[in-house]
Image (cartoon, rainbow, N blue to C red; front, side):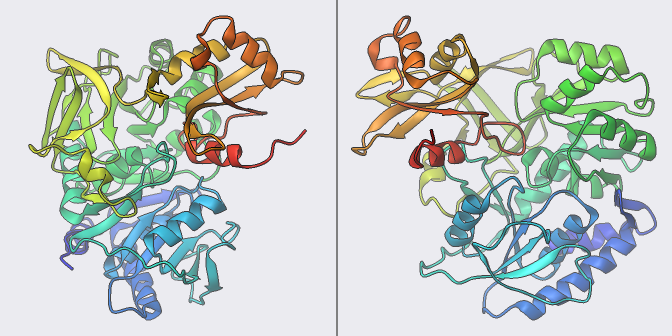
Length: 479
């Protein structure tokens, strides 16, 4: 197995030894201290190894100093970290463990890992409050990793399962280096990160990217509320804020009068940010929100340095982007290699020129990318193409509907069907929703499968979790 990241991190941690590397509400580690902690934890992981190939270690926890220690320790041990979203439930976690052949799991003691853990392993505190468990063996053979794979991350599950993306060490280091270069990240920056480190937004902008120039990374425990954001910014004198759109909306609702004095840059990605929120946030805080466009499979792609809301910015170093009638195609130095647990699917999205088809539509205006829609969202039912967005728009106008998601699913005969999960108030029925849809939509666009819920299940960045929605359809509807 060829490795890049352990050598790179060894050099980086040694170079910035006396500087603050990472903090959370419970602790602070300088670069030299972080190296020492990670090395000790790596030695412990090595003792747990039994196979003649690199250990596969799942990281299943929220952001913390200990999470960073566990991630670096896994790399230093010559193992491969699998960064699982802490919002995944037991079902998703068991799918990942079996699909990817995990050996160990680093997790919070309170996490429900009963479905995958065979035993809890003892340590001498190398992982802080986190626990290491051995994953139970599965009967299915585990798929082999590529020789140069050093990190694995997961899609958000919008395809119906968390697909595991393999990344080479060269791709991970390129993502960090090109982000730092393209956004002007320096040793004097202090990054307040409220996005999960398992997600591309934080992974690409706030982990290795922070360590390369010697910046400091500041993490928060618990629910990222507006008051928690202000408190962390004040305590750390942060210069950069990294968060998803929902958090900026929360801050705007709170209308803070202080806390942003040192912040120069706010970064948003993961979902569309409403222009009214952007404008109000900047009016309240004086801080511009900079758009960042990335795809899980390709890494960070663009950055808007002006923060004026006019597009998603120009391509970052190492990124080639084409906006054409057939959609946006990208080729990047940070591109993943394949899906470990979905053979051939990733490769189908890469053309002969090495460009990945993102499924997004957009155009380049004065060098800046502007998204206009999706090319791959249509549902094909009986040869008819249906846009789920149209269905959702109609459902949301029905009395008593709070939110809705439409997607393709299989009916009882195993055939493609249009499904919708709808969050409703008391008294709303499936029949009333079908009647409402039939009043404005042709019959083939009325959802054949309807499930009513109190709220739409979402992943850690606030997007609907299609995996959980599909599982809802397979369970009996309670009365």
